[in-house]
Image (cartoon, rainbow, N blue to C red; front, top):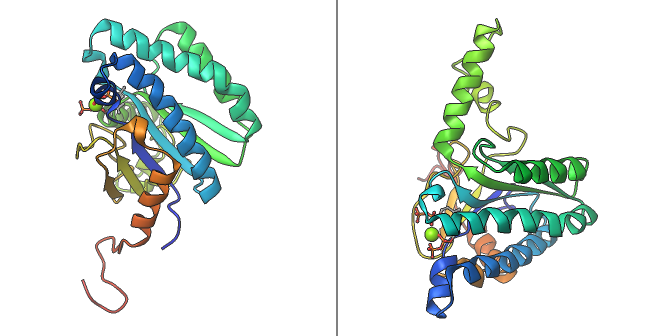
Length: 237
Ligand code: IPE
Ligand code: IPE
Ligand code: MG
């Protein structure tokens, strides 16, 4: 089995990682940035072309105001601090999710990094921020209705046509979906795109995940037998 063309990661367990160390939750989020850098470097080395990481869900607004504020600030600071390095490493950055509800300065920073890296080719990094799989489907339905009202002919029976309305239709479906911290759920991540993803769960908290852990997940993926509803070549199940 080849390297997955698109890996999704639900980066979970920052809070518990910090709690185990008697630290405030925000230290866990900070440590999570290092984990992401290690994973990003290895993903490039392994030849994975596309990575989508879940950084903030549409449900995460339910957290205490202080934590939400911290996460928004940390995201913006990280984009600002790492923009040059990502650009130099030929990484194309895209932020998927709803822009409405985000502070205007953060929206500007997102636009700038997307613009700066838009012609980069070596690696695609999608960051899901204020992202929800159901919100994405609702947004897609609204766009389709608008296009129909404007007179566009749309084949509503064609999956490819519908998928063209996703936030990032240009990337392949998720082939490997990783979730850290021992939780075994999707939490509203890439619902359409993960329809046939191989799932990989690890008990490691996100700040303890790194390039080596990613490689383990890839090795596991290579052993999977993907049938997509069909049968093996030998005719077995
Ligand atoms: C993941 O870690 C980061 C975000 C959801 C923003 P958590 O903050 O969910 O950490 P736990 O699950 O409470 O340990
Ligand atoms: C999912 O983690 C969202 C992100 C990693 C950004 P959560 O910690 O928010 O998910 P639940 O609450 O365990 O489902
Ligand atoms: Mg969590």
